[in-house]
Image 1: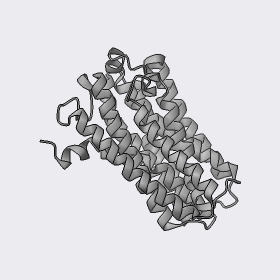
Image 2: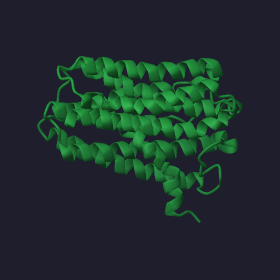
Image 3: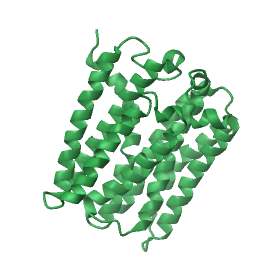
Image 4: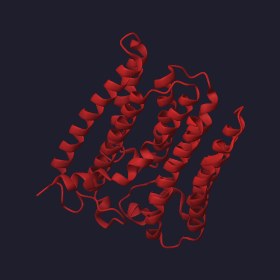
Length: 301
C-alpha cells in the first residue's frame, strides 16, 4: 500500500536545498539594492521546490519505465522498487504540476501586479517551460537526460534562470549585468552535483543506454570537467566580489563553503570505485547551499 512516506521518499528531500540556492542568491543581490520582498521570496522558494519535486517524480518515473534504476546505487527509486506504480507516480506528477503552476501564478501576480501584463506573460511561459523541462529530463523517447544535455538544463535553470529570474521578480529590471557572474557560478556548482551523480551511475547508465555527459566523456575527462566547474565557480564569485565598492569580511564569508568543495575535488581525483561518490553528492549539494546562504548574507548584513 502506497503511503505519504513513499511519496516523500520519491520527492528526495535532500535535493531541495540545492534547488533553492539560486533563489537565495538572486534575493540577496536584490536586498543589496533595497528591493527585497519577503512574500515574493517565500513564494519563489515554494515554487522552486515544486519544480524540483516534480523533476524528482518525473526522474523516478522516466528511469523506472526505462529500466535504468534496476541496478541503482544510492537512494532507492520507488517505481523500480515496486513501491509506487507508474500510474500512481504519473498522478503525483500531474498534481504537483498543478500546485506548482498555481504557486507560480500567485508569485507572478504578487511580483508584477495586474499592470505588467507582458512581464507576467513572460514569466508564465517560463513556468510552463520549467514544468516541461522537469518532465522531459527522463520521460519519453526524446528525454534529453539520455543524450547528455542534462548539464545544460541544470546550468540554465538552476543557475541563470534561478538567479536572474528571482532578481528580476524584485527589481523588474536587469541593468546590472555583473549578476551574470554569480548566476553562472551557481549554475556551475549545481552542474557539479549532477556530474557527481552521473559519475557514480556511469556503469549502470551505460548499460541502460543513458548517454549522460559522463558516459560520453569517460571517467578521466569527467573528473577534469568536475574540477573546472568548481574552480570556475570560485573564480567567478571572487571576480564578482572584487567589482563591489565595499570591502568587508562579510563579503567573503562564502569562501568558507569552498572548504568542503575543495576536499571533494581531492576525493574525486583519487576515486576508482564509482559507488563511493554517493556520499559526496550530499557534501557538494549542501556546500553549494551554504555558499548561497553565506554569499547572500553578505548582502543582507
